[in-house]
Image 1 (cartoon, rainbow over the protein chains, first blue to last red):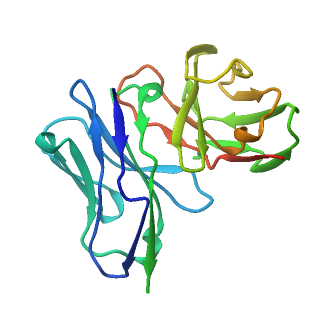
Image 2 (image 1 turned 60 degrees about the horizontal axis):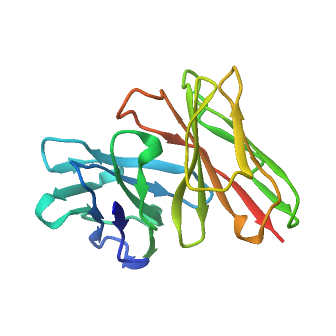
Image 3 (image 1 turned 90 degrees about the vertical axis):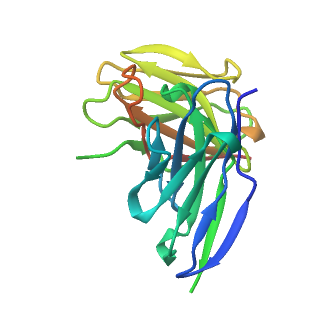
Length: 113
Length: 114
């Protein structure tokens, strides 16, 4: 079955610390992978996406993610977190068709000063 | 350029009532997608409209329905509301069947059923 798992429901980090949010997927074909961020009162915003090619993908706001096929993972990273990064982060996997994307349940990031 | 806009932002309804949510896509986008984001469940795909036609629906009962107008705006209707319909309803738009195009999301409508 196709699925996305975000094992961490809630993560707390200090401002300036590094961040890694985990995403594991189960998908029968070559996946298209996405990370979205949802700030309080906002809709989802695309941070980055992986379709093919270089497995290290750069996104907006200083985020990057690495596709590891052997581990079925697409973890999101940021070297130094800012207080404005506090939000909920969603990983999604699927074909390129928006109606077939499978979203994870999200990881809520809290940033302490 | 205006993004995806949804209205209302919040509403409270009583169990058994009916509700209509509205979405205006980004100018030029022909596809509108509806998602339900219930607490702890992530985003669940509801409906996809493109060029005025329903193209796909998720695993939701028929009391969830909608339509797309000639200007590509869309409505989501939910009949016979149940408590578990309480959720954030998100609308997204893109250029439709051009595969791989990014979907842009609105801020959502927070529905509370009491």
